[in-house]
Amino acid sequence: MEPNDMGGMTVKDLREAKGNRTIAYVQVASEEEAVAASAAGMDMIGTAFVPNRAHFARAVPDTHFQFGLPWGKHADSTEALRDAMAAMMAGAQSVYCGYSPKIVEALAVEGVPVICHVGLVPSKATWTGGFKAVGKTIEQARMIWQQVQNFESAGAFAVEMEVIPAALATEITKRSKMLTISLGSGAGCDAQYLFSADLLGENRGHIPRHAKTYRNFAAERDRMQDERIAAYGEYIADVRGGVFPNDVQSVATDDAVLAQLWKD
Image 1: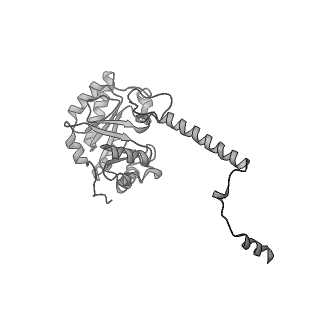
Image 2: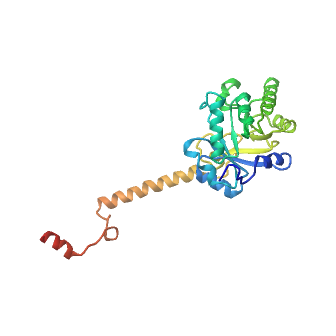
Image 3: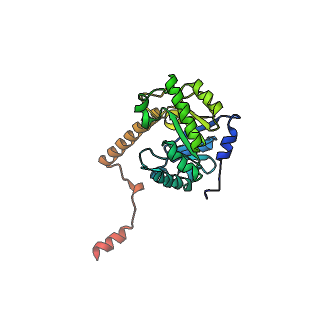
């Protein structure tokens, strides 16, 4: 697929959906998950732009695909821009960038559709008090709104709002031209976002408050692991008991051939 051979919702389509319908968006960690999400009709699929995932976009050409720039990999805007362009050439239609408005602007100026990030930004959580909601105080609410305006001025087309009060996210959505993406920030945003691991129940123990689990893949993986152990055990028993291999798993030859071999 060439970069201009777009499948699924384009950035233009996403922007036109603002105020008309809510976008469904999921973060995946495997090609299988990406293909399943696309088959289900997901509007947007995202993942980190790392070598072992760089082919994912090609596997789902009919869905809007977002690659995320790994935070900490890029020392300046030039490095970020180079990676963003590589992500677009790999089939992405948009790029997540968790850096400053300065770097976002460098990407946007070159036509890269950028998704920025406010609220609970994991790589910067120490500034806002750790892994908890951001925006409950007037100071934090003002900070978030200012950040949104700064990113919009920098050219971002969308903003991920992570774990901020729903009412604040709703009001920002009304006031910003950017597509707003809710990760634990209520139903008033333009798009809803979940991690596949949470959605499918891949994790054991803590499940984020904002997540909804639709399946229990952790239990299924436990069952499969028990089946692996049982299968390996049966194989070991067959080997030790002389049951495997038998004639079915062995290659036969004519006794005359062997007789001739040893005779020679």
